[in-house]
Image 1 (tube, rainbow, N blue to C red):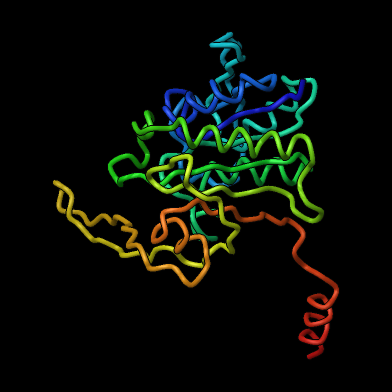
Image 2 (image 1 turned 30 degrees about the horizontal axis):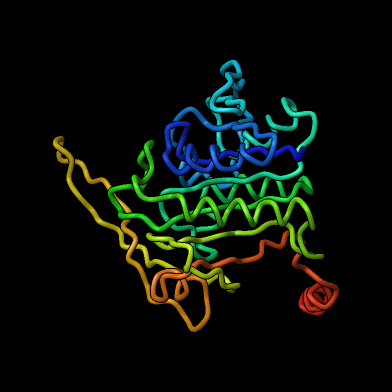
Length: 259
């Protein structure tokens, strides 16, 4: 049986993680390794300046659960220690869409998939659109996950049985708020910027300024992941490619540096 590691950046109480764990454990040998607390927006950061504290593995609903006080990307490194083999890393279901490069490069959920991909382990990052009130919530979103988990399970089995296409290191799967059996998966290019950032300046009780970043959603472009998920209410599937620099790019830099 295939061995799969499931992680996320919302912690072990996220409903998306728990429902997906139940679904994946039906068909694979599953180990869940997750940060013990919320770790959203940590990207691919690693814990390098202190020791990691790992809680003892417990058996839950047919799979092993390991929690730790690190980041989602740490989960992948820990998985290489605790698991005899890793055929696939799945990260999610994240509460809040990781649409476009702006979110993908910030997200701890996608960061775990990047860490796996760098280690040449196939990976799938999964996120679902959510209300802002659900962002950074350790319980994630409380919505219907059955159809979404069915589709993720089928995609995971396809990757396990056939491997990823040549040149593709991982997949970013972005789900709309509501997923049914009729919801389609469409291949899409990630948008560049999904949100513009507004800086909100406020005054604390001591009279000092502090700043809060606000994200204001932008409309997607024709056929990109933002349009597919936010406007068309379908599922966007985007490739993650680690080695994107080719020889012609190197030639451009060689010419550029002739000064």
